[in-house]
Length: 326
Image 1 (cartoon, rainbow, N blue to C red):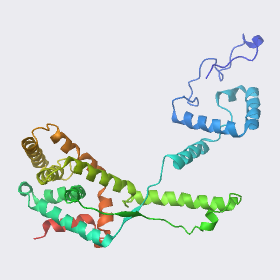
Image 2 (image 1 turned 45 degrees about the vertical axis):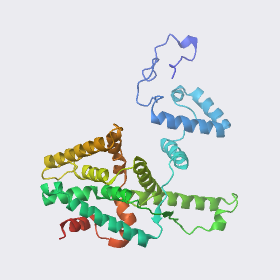
Image 3 (image 1 turned 90 degrees about the vertical axis):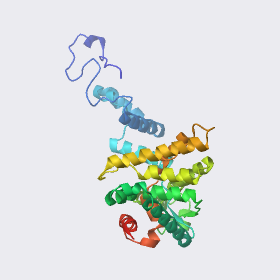
Image 4 (image 1 turned 120 degrees about the horizontal axis):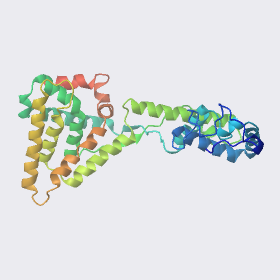
């Protein structure tokens, strides 16, 4: 913003008012070009100038009469209006609401997922290295990573399932939604339902309800492991690496857990070097396949595959019973 200029040459010798300094202003009201607020207000100003040129002309005349108004762009709405307009534009373009999904043939798929969960529990309970931990640490470790282990088990056994989108209906009449734009009341009514639809989908996604993006992450992991061609021993060492996580809070002996994880990674490295001597980077690629598993939420796995079987029973309680059963 350029410094304030005097109105005429005859007034240039007069002392400037303390409230209107001739130098650049450092007050908090001054907007900086790199700030988010400046971008929001500038974009709103440009839209207002494009839609109403006559209003801008009158605003420019008023700003010329009052020098203190020159420091702000003309035609700016309130800050709340500018933010709401920016968020609304973002919601209609980049922020696509999540698509909630459900299983096809859920009875069969849930039974197969339960069988894989039992296999996962048996794998953990039968690990010789797991017997070196106290029961509390074994249960805590498994409760923390059971979903990741189950997804690995699904990948190993080529588990396949299909999903379908869940359509939320708020009672909208299809005839009213397809009517012309002349009825402003109908358009406002449809717009309200659209907002409720978007809000509902966002809320259920935050509550752990499965969405299309969750399924996409699982499918990407399935495809990546299939392309690498992992064998059973590599899967076993990966499961041990995931299980023995020393960073989980509440462990009695995290040092022992870290030792077991290091041993699992060392065995995996030796096995890969022995079976794939011509692929020195395979060990690194195998380990780098694990981080995407952390993006798969355990609540999504629980809701998707076990909600019909366990109802409202907490998954952590069920896992503890399975680990301690004889």
